[in-house]
Image (cartoon, rainbow, N blue to C red; front, side, top):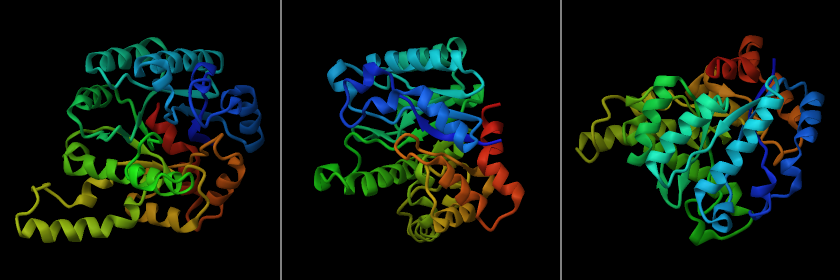
Length: 301
């Protein structure tokens, strides 16, 4: 069983009002063919973030268009797609209302958030009630890199460096803020971050050593444990990556039970190659099977 933790589909109402995306992001039949060719049983449909809200006038309108249209897809193909709903983050009461509507009425099994929203990260107080409900209802939260004004954008402004570096560091900052705010410690939320969690797996040792040094000087608050004690609570997906070093770093920090295969389709067109990369890893067959689908099936059961 192979389940894709990171794929995208966008309705026409968003494609036509956003930069970068084209009609290929809205072809569900093509996506099904690619899944069948790669042997993928199911795919999570999450939101890749966009600037459509600028033309549509509000985030709430984007939420309505995305969630209502994705709900029709998961209703039509209940055995092939898993919906991850987005929320109107600009109005907290509506966030909770949409959380309940999407998971109780529309059939969504997960929530999809961005790493940041115009510089506001997921440690902001507006998200706390979302985390409480997600914890109580056992609903995982997929977190995608923000492509609109990620960290460093004003300084870099480069069409290659922004997706290669800034998206990854926005993810890294998001996880760091969830760590130091105590959210990773205090809430049993199943956060699933794309792109192996940014560079967090490579910074694990530095998190611990720097925290211990600064804590001895009373420069930082007491986390009541090492940073890596709480970083191990997150899940990450592979986002179509095929680099063995990235797999090894994530496995060392999180263990194979917290790693999910993700294709990042249709941004990346060849799911088979990233599936094969996992099958070529020097880990047990059980661990490979878990990464390819069993881990995710447990999170959304």
